[in-house]
Length: 138
Image (cartoon, rainbow, N blue to C red):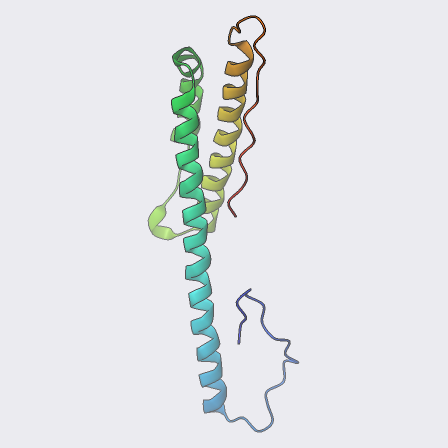
């Protein structure tokens, strides 16, 4: 059977000498059901991680000064609106495009936040402390 990590056992490709067709059919059915569970588990984990990243993007956006948002938001809106997906089809291409978009938005929002901190006027004697980078939850 498939393991928890999704690795199957090594198989020589030859059918067991003592197994009949019904036994092999039942074994393959069990493996396919396990594969189905793996698809669901991996899909749910991916969804949860990306939803968390989107919430992080929203928090970054909320922390930006209004002037920076006014200057940058039109380009960011174009990036999001250019995403063309067909959710009903469940295409891997769409998942990759959304993943790429989330990564790009994370990069530009982090850059915008860092630029905002660097250009903010400081009081004399005040030192800047950079916020720690976010770690990938996955």
